[in-house]
Image (cartoon, rainbow, N blue to C red; front, top):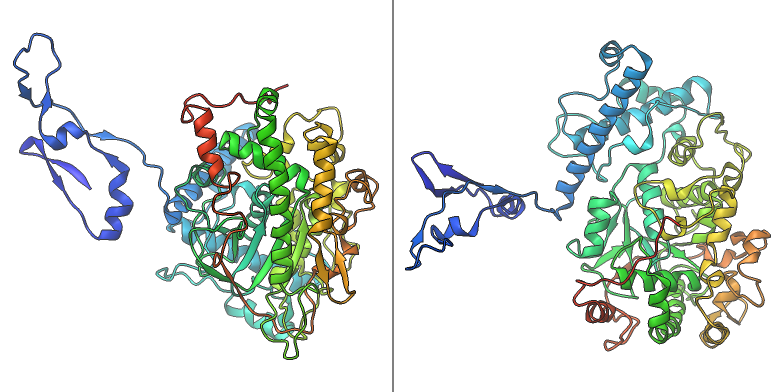
Amino acid sequence: LVKKRKDDRHHMISVITTYSWSRRLLPIFEVSYQIIQHTVRESTTHVTDHTRKLRKIRHLYRVFPAHDSSTLLDRLNTTRLAKRMRHYKRNASNSGEGDNLLESKQIYHYNMTTEELAWYEWTQSRSECVSAIIQDGPTEYEYDNGRSPKFDLLRYRNPPSSSSYNFKLTGNLLQEVIRFNPSLLPPKILPGATVLASYPRSGNTLLRSLIERITNIVTGSDTRPDRALSKSLSLQHDLVGEGVTNQKKTPIIKTHFPERRGCMMFNGSRIILLVRNPYDAIDSYWNMCCTNTHTESVAEEVYERYSAKFRSLARHEMVTWVDFLKFWLKEGNTTFKEDNDSGEGSGPPLLLVRFEDLILDTESVMEKVMKFLTIPIGGTNMDQNSELHPFWKWRIRRALGILKGSKLKSGGDHSTPSSQTNVNTSSLGSYKPRSSHNESSTSSGQNRKLSSIGKSLSKNRYTEEDLDHFHQIAKDETIMHPPTQQNVNLLEALGYDIEFANFPNNFDQGEAQSDKFDFKYPIDNRNPSTVRINKGPELRPTESPFGRAMTRWRKSQTNDDKEPFPIKNQTT
């Protein structure tokens, strides 16, 4: 830390503790360069000999955009606590009870750090669930603590080791649960790291936000935290786990490998493969490259001016999209992997999630995801049909804002489909996807979701020749399916083929159900293994102009981003 000496107003004293703290705290304060040099050239016109004099100036302080995940997490939780306070004060003022209501209701537990408080509130949530199940039985559980999920505090995977608090179910409650039925305890996230793999612009930010709202655990990413897009996610969209690949901190780690390598290598014990139709994913990838943002889209004039560049990118990226899916379907424990006699080293379990299903049937998809994260899979112990614990069902419905007036039962008929409850996924968290822009306010929520599927086709982003080329690539780059001894066209298998699957109308007509493709899910006759992430070559050639080289191209066309591309007016 830097401060002034009392006896000399022009000199500085630097107090540096450890190397770690110096890297974390010193950049927060910015001191004038002239002060450090002790002198400054006088700028007045009447000085002709350029006499160097001392400028009397105070410290200049500036908040530094920290990239350290722990600092960002503390900052985020502090902000959420402040918002929680303002929310309760506003409600107290509107009810006319004022300070009396605030005094009678403690908003948060005192004398704790934000990290300890996050774990304390999570433990209380699990305890309340266990108590309700013991009292009412395991058939149903519904509880509303009156706090919006947007005020929940996030935490790392493991509780703080230096804390004096015990974040476990203890005492009579735990003994009663063990005696009554140990299965009533809400299962924890399975050990190891689950890889969230996706081609860019396929919805991994939405899925990460949903998982964080359900589990209150920070999700990680293998992207360098100091990149512009990573800083945007951390500072503006509350995804503070950018650059975190330590499975002791997070159970979910996002990667785009092998489309591009991340900053750190790590092992994955399970794989969630998130897929989006290539037409919308490639169009969104183009906008991300041109704007260097996650949410803005370039104006139509940019498409017209650089139509040749866009068409070349689209045709090249279609090959990358197909190769990306083939890599993961063969890397994970799927029926696309050749069987061997021992069954060893057959890859980690894999769950395939389509982005279109995620926005159309959010509750059902998130139940599958939470089953995958909490129910052990391996050898002959896999049970994809196991019932999800009522606690996690409640957490899902609470995160989606569909809790009130519903009952969570152990049977399969506990709720209506998410498509009928009209979950507005674009409003979850601070991240606003491009698909939420320019939607008619008069149409229903479900119609808006359907219209966002294949929106690049409705906007005529691709010519007929481009679309024929896409489908020809899918036919040429098939993947062998050993059980049937057939070559699988991934566009057809995933319901994205325009001619045979009638995309995107098949989603509107209910003909693109993901449960038809059971080969994408783990099978039970193999022993799972881990996969090494970010080890090996990228899919694109080193000299490819459509990967990281798109940054150089954008800067060359925008005067080093000083004259950015025109942005689409998102208010019309």
